[in-house]
Length: 342
Image (cartoon, rainbow, N blue to C red; front, side, top):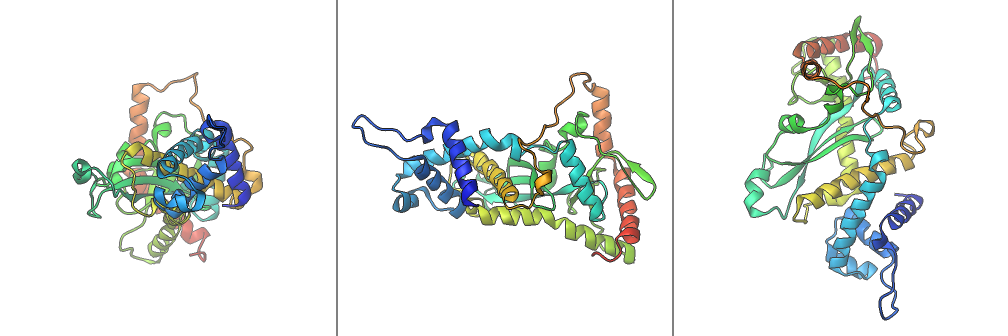
């Protein structure tokens, strides 16, 4: 991250939490500065070093480093979550749809997948529940990422024994859509009209109207071309995971904390700062940024969906017929309008 962004974060944290303000004790001796506490926190996040290893560099004790890290990630979440981990609002949705249209997938809102974070200090009583296909305790992060690697959705905390489908059923990803308060999405492909955006997903995800998966063992040039294009663009979320882990080594290596709450705050703070770095590096066009994160989509107080509407919306999301129709339309659309891009 750039020096300017580091200083911006440090000053915001110092103004938000008086713990980071330098104080003097009863002997009039100056305590640790905000720069020392924030630097120690960043060294743990970015290099993945244990807390006692920061003493050699910033002269700070292990217990103080741990306390600084916990307060730092809490401050990051409280200050920046509304801006840098917001759900797509109307302007965001319009921009994502325009990017998807340009890449040959009208109606696409991003790519979805899950990542496992190894939990080294998982309590022995919980290790069976948190151990999955990797045969060691892990915690799962479900994320949605766009082409610029901005992470629009991050759902973290389920045990590693779950798979992507189990995580999806507990995820709040489609909560606003089911409650009819999400931004409107309208597009047409191959003569068919659609009213819900979709995410590119791998083969384990269910055949819902809000997912577009690749075609297993495609037959014919059109289907082979579609499978190649879908698999190429779906890698956006894989790239986002790789960049997140390279920037914050703490989520690449084994987690050393004992409680789930701290691990959840660390992961969320890393995702928020990942998005801040993307904006700072210019991956997001300047005219597409928001001075204050934009207006988040809020539920309307004029109309509340009743139970029947809520159930019907859930049925629409999980409609298998719409999923296959959308897939067939995209096969034709890519073949006719984007024949030489993949």
